[in-house]
Length: 169
Image (tube, rainbow, N blue to C red; front, side):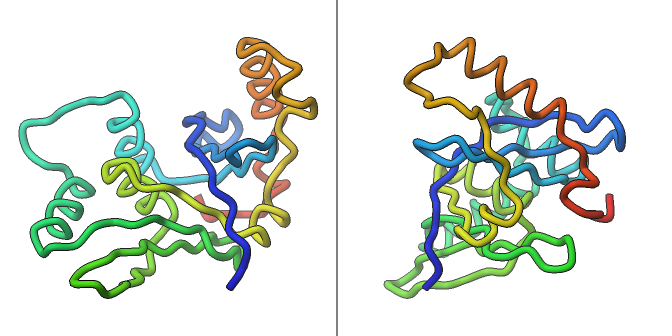
């Protein structure tokens, strides 16, 4: 089994060059970040839950989670497993009736579901090594929260989507 690194969703930014949203993942307790270019609809779904927005009727990712729960299941975690030909792959790990179920999914949809389910997000070490960026460059304990935020913002502003390949957006 590949080594998995737990990450947290740092936020969403807009790539000024391509006008595409990017979800930023950062390893827990570490400095590496993984930018993933995503679609606008998925960015809205992620942003909605991060902003704690509520809607009268369930949105697609809410509906998916409601279906899993109504069938007696739960989202255990999501894992970004691979990067092949400039496309990230992910799995949603479910548990139902004592059985483990893996669902192939796009990372952006997986992240939207994980946020709603309050499930952890993991990235395989291989993906993080091949596509991750060194985040802050200084031990986190040596920087204030504002200094870390400014350093990360600068790193993200300097990123070029071409450095990570063409993600078809």
